[in-house]
Length: 134
Image (cartoon, rainbow, N blue to C red; front, side, top):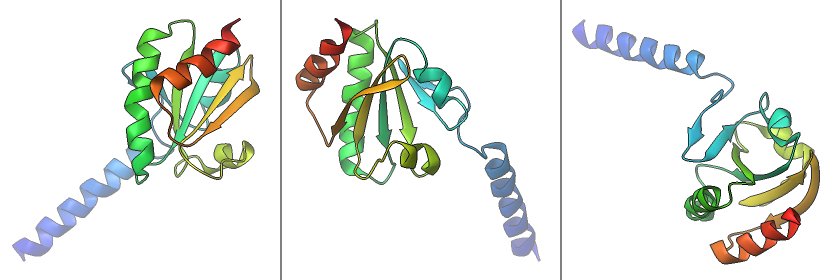
C-alpha cells in the first residue's frame, strides 16, 4: 500500500511540473542568451540584429554549438542572442524551414538575412554575424 501511495505521489508531482512548464520556458536566460518559445519569438527578432540558435536537447552538435553561442553573446553586445528548442516549438521551426540542427538564423529587424546550418567555430560565426552589423 505504501508503494502505491508513493508512486501516486510521484506521478502527481510529475503532472504538476508538466502543467507548470507547459508551453516551454517563458522568459528565461542562459547567460546572455534568451530562451525563446513560440510566444516570445516574434517580439525578440522584431528590432535590430538577432541571432537565434535552433537546437534540440538530443542533438550532440547542438550541445557543442550552445556554449559557442553563449560566448558570442558575451562578446557581441550589439546583437541579441536567443535559442529555440525545435522539439518544443515545432511551428516556429517549420515556419523557417529548419531541416537540420544546429541552425543559426540571423535576423535584421525581423527579416532573415542569413541562415547558417551545422556546427561552426566561434571565429567563423563572429565574422558571419559581424558582416550584418555594418
